[in-house]
Each structure stands twice: as structure tokens, then as C-alpha cells.
Length: 264
Length: 170
Picture 1: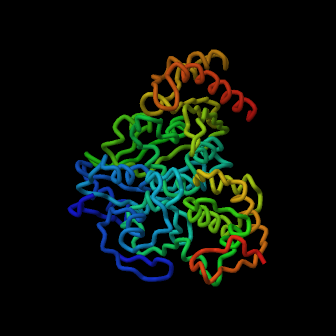
Picture 2 (picture 1 turned 30 degrees about the horizontal axis):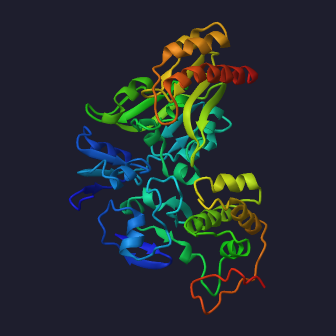
Picture 3 (picture 1 turned 90 degrees about the vertical axis):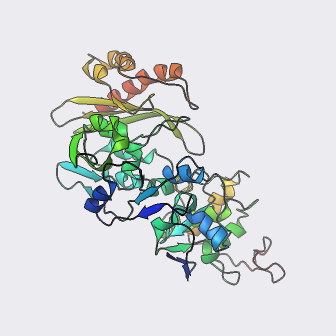
């Protein structure tokens, strides 16, 4: 912490986007649950900090068949979608605890970088399975793209919101490691879209979350479980080894498909 | 920057990205929020920000400019303990005390938002608070009692200002 840090608090999404510019030299602080400890422990020393709390990005519009979730929405508030997108609400309530979920934002969770000792970005799974579109600001201005593409360069852009169609059914299954918080070792989300298409995604991987396309194309649940291992790159961390994750992933895929089947 | 802390308007001089925890303890001398893990996992620094529990260690003070901050000193006084403070005393819900202020504030907010005496719901509400004395049963007993509206007549002895009389159940 130095007193030379420039701290700016935009009061609208447009102002936030314009102050973010191309993102270079900007430390974004939304809920602060990840970046504030980084500052405290000296891992991040912001030259210019963008405080997003007052930027009006904490929106949630689920009135019609399309849902738009503002990047600044507290993770806890996804519980309001329990009826429309059960898996998203369940995944959200599986993150940390009440206070941290109230403070941490959807955007912060989705854009979180690797922590090294434990996976981050639990919400990437449900949003990938929902085939969400990410609207972001940054170099070249505002743009919308599939979340899957956005994730690859999420550190360079300011996420504004995520949009998706309400599914016919959704299911979530996770492997948790009991601790002060039940850390998510590995999680799978399944979505059956209104047109019957089934999409699967996983988090707790070596990189960010990923769609399980080979599993989606498999003939049955057993084949899907086996195929899912080929869809992802698994890693070792403080919670579990890649070896263990490789054995857990098919189980979670089968559980999600079973839950989706019951919801038929 | 300005904050209202336990009902008193305070002008803040710390740098804007200083944590609310450091501002309270180091600048204002309010030491009930404890410095535990400093990464949001232990709950001991929890304060109420505009009535909702929040980790002071995860909060840059600039992010709560103008807010009303309540620490455990602000929910009751020695002469008039809050219902949560009385129940914690009656149920012996404090051992070493390090987690107690955070626990009490989470409990206060839980009861304020209409929480019941359902033990699972209380556990969920207190899930972010670690008691390394492992005194969870009595903490949950205390919160359940408050949720049921039970009242306790706890007196604080003059000889121990600022301390509750653990044997003072009348």
C-alpha cells in the first residue's frame, strides 16, 4: 500500500468502461474478496485502482426467457435464480460463506485467476453450460462473445454482464474438500436447453473452466463420464491430485446426467 | 473520507485502499474486530456495514465511504447488553473470545433478517466463522435462544467494567 495509489470510483458502467481503457496498469476492485488480500499480503501493488462498487453493475434481469446478470452482482444474489436455473443457484451457494458471497461478485468469480493452491472461478461451470454470452469493455471497445472465448483473455478485459437463455433443466454436482470453507475440488454442471440440447461444463481443472464436448456427444452416461476425462486438462494442487480428479470427474458427470434425467 | 462508526461520525485519514480492519483498529482504536487470517476465511474481523455482516479485512475503506459501521461495542452497552450479547453470556458461548465479536455480529444480522432457531440455518449463517476453541454447540444454543425471543437478565459487575459477568444469570 502506497499513498501514491490513484483510486477511482466510477458511478456508471459507461464511466467504468472508459476509466478501464485498455486495462493496462488498472487494478479492478469489485467485491474485493480476492484482490484486497492480495494487496494486504503485498502480492499486488496497484498504481491505479478502479473501485466498481458504485458503478451500477449489480443488476439482475430474469423477467423474460433471457437472463442478464451484471458482473457486479453479489454471488449470494444468484440464489434468487433457484427456480429458473437451479444449478447456478446451487453452485453459487456452494461458494465460501454468506458474508463472502454477499461481498464477492459474479464478475470477480468468473474472471478470477488461478490461485495456485486451490481452484477458483466456480461460477464459470454453470455459465459455460448455459452457453452464456459475455459483454465486456477493453481494448477496441465494448464487445460480446461466448464466455468460452472470453475466459481466455479475461484478465485483459472488464466484464460488464453475462446473458443466457433460461434452460429447461439444470444440475450441479461437486466434490468438496472440508475446510473452514468447503473448497470445491472439482465440479460439473449440466444444462438441458429449451431445444433439448444437453451441455456439460467442469471447473476445478488445471486452467479455467471448460465445456465437456466429448462427454456431451457420448451415447450414455457411462460413456460420457469416460469421455469427459479427454475433454479437460487436470492438475495437482493443495486440495487434490490430477490422478484423483481423473477418477472423480466421471462420477460427477454421471451424477449430473442422472439428475438431469430425473428432471425430464 | 467519512465513516460512521458505532453511531459516531469519523473522518478517516488512512489511504483509500487501507482495509476497513486496519482503519478501525489502527486509526480509530476500535479493537473488537480481530486480525485473524486476513483473507476472509476466519470471520474474526466481521463488522456490520449498513447492518449487514462484512469482512473488514476484505474491504478497502474507500469502498465503504459514508457507510455506517457497527462493531460489537455498538450493539449494546455494559448497562444494556443486546439480546445476542445476553444470550452469549447466558449460554457460555465465549471461550477465548477471539471469534466472539464476529460471531455476535453475524448472529445479530441473522436474527435481524428473521432467522429462526433452526440449527442448520444458524450453522449456515455462521459458516464463515471459525471458533478454534471449538465451542460451536454453545454458540448455536445462544443464537437459537435469541431467535426464539428468549431474554436473559444479565448484569455486568462494576468491578469488571467492559466485561460481562459470566456467573451473573439472575
